[in-house]
Length: 410
Image 1 (cartoon, rainbow, N blue to C red):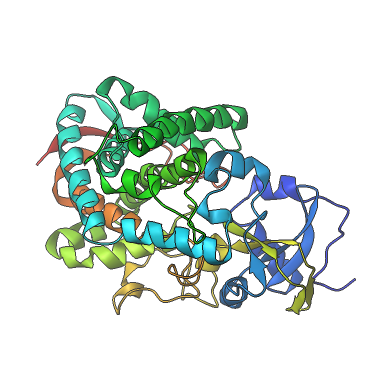
Image 2: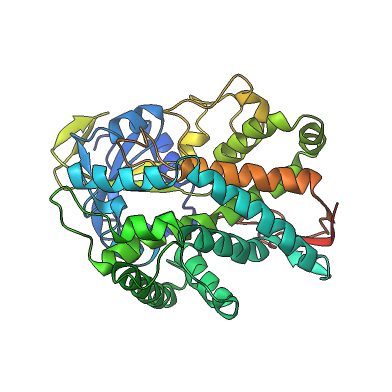
């Protein structure tokens, strides 16, 4: 049996679930290759890691996205019919819609709104004995993105809408049935907003709701109200999920305290700090595609229709791509922004033409703004708690949460 092939009858899903961030890189390392065929979720699957794999995976002549993501994730995290599952001209048109919405100056208004909401929330947090940072940030981000997008959320509904949005990225596997129910409820809420916008009953709220409601595909057909709601959630959900990146940044300030002082003295270092947070910390473990046309690569036969998984976390910690990858070293980015293909925290390739996350720049800017606020806009203490990352969890937040005390705005 070639080293690149494992027993196709033994399903490795439990091993993947036990260590979702390191499973692919470990499997490929043991095989001595960058690609291994095995069985996951009852299907033969090829797992891939490393910079070479990123380049191969981004080849649209070899891979497509339709039908690639397992149904449990389509039904919760991504939604059915969203741009992540599209290919060709339809995907290009949908992607262009997102890139236009998330480009400056529109995205700048989102970040400015977030900073204002964060400062107002901090005045309330100052009245509490302890603030669990991830949970506290979620409604701030939900309020920010909903107001920016033009989706009305009454004050007494904010907690409910936040819980619906957070469940889509926090519970797609651990509380799957609950997450499905939360998606149905969230889609129903946004279908009503889409219908109202199309009927002319609302207007002037925000560019995103109108742009998605009025979007037409390359054939001139409008999106169904349900698909439009899915795409609205693909704006709202990832913005709320930036709470995870901010917690990781706060965690890094505790583990590398010299960088708190450095950022206070020289805020211009914030970009290299946040980019290293994105490389180092475990957010997305992998992305999926399906083989469009059979080919061979790295000694493995990629059969037509076969699912392939590209290792994001492992590639970000690959010693062939990075010097001392297990060390948190923001200075590695002092010479400029990270270059693909080894830097793939939110997917690889060109965000304008491929399937790399269109909201990546916005996530970076929101995290930068929050990190500078943590450094110079607020005082707080981090009491003793278990700050080890739970690598079995998606996303891999600290085991004990990340709670701060004695929080006071400066």
